[in-house]
Amino acid sequence: MVKLAIYGKGGIGKSTTVSNLAAALAEKGLRVMQIGCDPKADSTAALHRAGKVSTVLDLVREKKNDFTLEDMVHIGFGGVICVEAGGPTPGMGCAGRGIIAALEKLAEKGAYEKYQPDVVFYDVLGDVVCGGFSLPMRNGYADKVFIITSGENMAIHAAANIAMAIENFKGRGYASLGGIILNRRDVKNEEEKVRELAEDLHSRVTGTLSRSETVQAAEERNMTVIEAFPDSEMALEYRALADAVLKDCGVTVC
Image 1: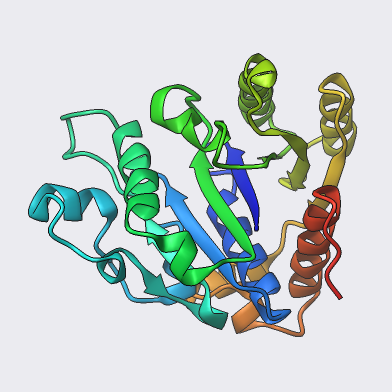
Image 2 (image 1 turned 90 degrees about the vertical axis):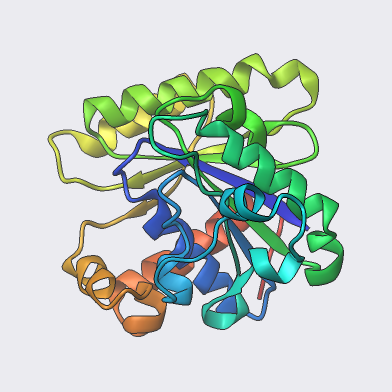
C-alpha cells in the first residue's frame, strides 16, 4: 500500500487533481482510497456525484461511535473508496479535528484491512500546516507528500511553508517530500519560478498540468476529466501525472 498526502493552497485545484489521479489509477485496476481532509468536504464529489455526503465528523457528532465503516465510505468512479473528514460547526472548534477523527476512525473500524487499497490519497488543505492538518504527514500515515502549486506568489509561498513543515518533521521518520506538481495558471515565468522552488527544496517537478477548459467542463458535469472526457488531452495529462507520482514513490504500474 502506497500512502500519499497531496497538499496545496486553497483554490489551487488540489481536489480536482487528486480526484483525477485517483480515477486514472482506478482505470489501471488499482484499488484506490481518497480521504478528503478539508472542512468543505468536497474533495471526492466528482468521483461519487452523490451530492452532500455524511462526513466522519458529522457521524461522530450525531452518533458518537455508533456507526459502521460503511457509513463513512462512499464508492465512486472506478470503485474509488471515498471518505470525507468534514469540519466543525462554523465558528466552533478546530478544523483539524475532523482530520484527526477521520484517520483514527478509519483505522479503528478496520478500513485498510477490509478494503486493502493499493493507493491511499490524503487530500489536505495547505494554507495552514499545524495540528490536524499536519497529521497526514506523520509517521504511520503518508509515505510521501506532493505539493501542488502554480506560479502565483501566494501559491508558491504556501508550497514553501508546507515544505518547511516536512523538513521540520524529517528527523522523526515522517513522510518525505515526493515532488512538486505544477498546475498552470499561465502567469509570467511560471515554469521557471516553480522549477526554482523545486530546486530550493532539493526536489523536482514531478509533473505539469495545463490550464484547460476541459477541466471546467468536467466540473460542470460534477465528474472527473477521466470519466467525462476520457480521450481528451487533459485526461492524458492526468494519466501521465499519475504514473509519474507512483514512479517517484518507486512504484511502476503497467
